[in-house]
Image (tube, rainbow, N blue to C red; front, side):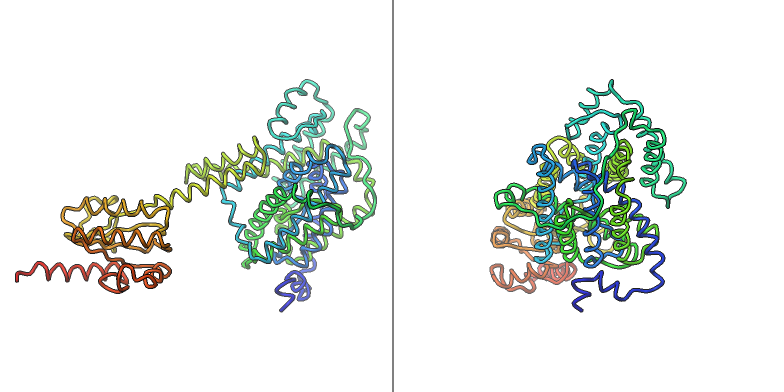
Length: 563
């Protein structure tokens, strides 16, 4: 029971089926084939040497394989989180490589600790905190920034700038000094990575592209013509160490670490839930926070940087038929062997090939089809998505996301402040009530106003509710009763209750009776506790609109009979 709760990956491995072994090994090799070049490339985003990207794979993948609940999710360096880490620590490092690595380890451990605390206090709901348009806009912004930042590697010029606009300006300044051998090799690698998967979907395009670029560079001696190579990669596995820091430094990094935690977890959960649904099982968001946190601590203590759920490698795992968390173990062992046995060949990789990998990664983050869908379904969601993208490109990742979230929350508050409402009636042939605004020919009962308010009745929309209800009653020729369909009033606070009582008194002064129907549980309990409106039973509260209408009919007929 303990293993299933806290170590679901290990629990699954202890119940391992022999039929899973072959597909898991094949999937593990496939994942490693994609993970190695992409991890090296993503390390370049932050300014790290190749081995740091590989260090960020090994221990985190082993930890998640034991602790994680998703059988498909692969963790590792991620383009979006690498860009966020770079934005957070590059200014503080001031060009010092050792300082950059130390800050990276600190941020990874902080993200890990924040994730674990979040999981223990059941904060997994943050997976829904970033709306789909906000997440798409953020990834589009990261993708565009990533593309503009890698143009230098592809065209063969040096630039110390970062960011989308700075990358474009650097392109304009250096376009005339394009290094043609670098451009030719990078373009050929990019073309190979684009065309190969279309013809052979199961072939890892990134690995094949980097392999052939390395082979061409070595055989043709392109480094002698100015094509830059990755350089020496230290042999061996990383040494484990706990990063040294201070409370002041952690305070300076806290905001960035918190933002990275939220975005990294939301991105990982989006991938994990998608593949879990495809295979008919569920994942616990709170436990995944803990698992991702432990994996990030593993990245931090093994001289790596923040990791997340890797959608491309997860897709490779699924396509190769991986059945269990053993895939992650196999991939981690293969990456470790590459560091021990093949560190020298890794140094022969040309930088334009890595630039091509990152250009493909950036393009893969941009979701044009989602933008088209937002435009078709909701212009506000489309605008929010674009605003997030523009914010990420102009003011930075975290401020851009923060602005988009604030706008979404303000819109939610506005919709709650001025929610939809309706006066209801009947149309022959349609069951139930219809909105008079939608069906002008609908009929109503003489003297009865049936009104629906589609939001909780709270302090900030109570006056609006009162204003709207009294307007509706005033528009009726001879109102005698109001039946409030309260099914949308899921909550009622003290201010809302006071306003409801004021409405009842105002209507009573006009000889109009107020009744409620379909009152939700929490709102009904509030009415019962207060007793402010009267006894919570007919003729004040009815279980259904039909019951309230029938009661009004009986009363109306009695009033209409001659004495």
